[in-house]
Image (cartoon, rainbow, N blue to C red; front, side, top):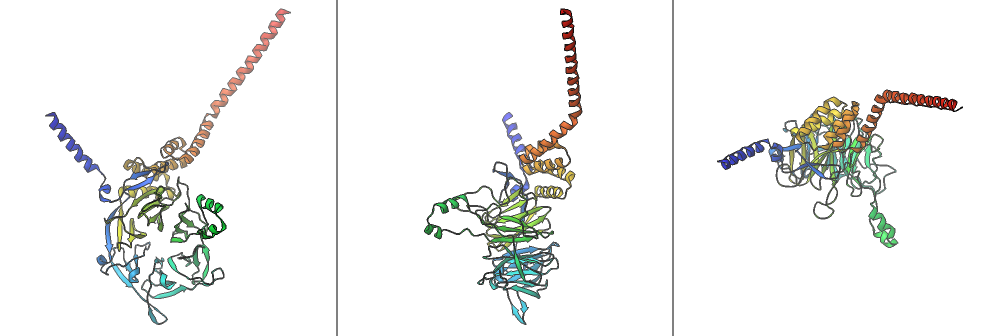
Length: 486
């Protein structure tokens, strides 16, 4: 009888455990994670779950063919660059096809794209296309009429044999155009509103690892001549935020600064205050399949101080906050919904993420989970300076995952801004944040000293008067003793 009761009880507990398990885990063919202070990957609840895969057939425009890029405007209109079919597919917020642009009129004749690689749409709905094989940037109206063509840039700083091969493009509110060009190591090419080349921004510094430097020091002149030159690395992608800061990624195995945020002067002002610089995976294999550092081929500014980078090597997404801390990573390769073959672009549609997969010729739409929504809300509130609101949301995040270090740090920083230094120390310790713990400790020590200053000074004065009284009493006793002896 006892055995039967135990079996029934175990079955009931198993049923409740199954019901209590997060739905996101069962719905995702990948594991989400972040890195802790010790460079260990820490599992997380999935921040996003795959909702649907959109194909050319489902849109009614025929199969995609090697699509290279996708762009979503602030008001939710979607533009797909179907490169193999040399066309642009424009959709509304509900993924309904508005129009297909596969040609435009140039000099009185019909003209087509040739393997276009990048697309950007301005607030005025002007479409910028990096028409790669034809060496030009084509600017169209929203209906597909030609505005102008940017090609054959001329400048004294360009080499005589320079060939313009644009692969990614974006533009700011002033009409300046930023182009990532193939073989252009000097930086991102910048053009004015009339399409004239005006220089570079974000020049990449030459880097070499210690092993390369050692081999060069020991090599003969002939061996050095055969070695690979340390030339700067090309940019891979580009995006722009509302303030006009340009976000870009590079693919450089020797660099830990493969994500950049460039101000109008071209200086990299990306914050890197986390334990690790934003660069994708921190730990990885050095040999074998999918080995080496992440190859970040695209980047998207999400708002609220957050941005997400796409790793084509291991087909993963990495989301960061304004401080440069990794919020979460997820994704992978495979045939299931939610994993990729050859991901090439990431975009945001309202609160959803969309990833363009050139290998599968589809677009995967991800919706946020409760965990993902809370992390985004807390990060945004902290970024906007609403510390009181962010603390409550971070506490909700910890109820879903008590091992999320960034939540502890977020609470600690909010408490620090509220001058609750002692409580902030507790959260910084839990979040393994030594820098901010030291700051909170110094402030708390100063606070204690200020509070106890009156008591300490009173005690010192009492001790001082007691010591003086003791010295006086002693002198009196000595004099009396001397008199008696006399």
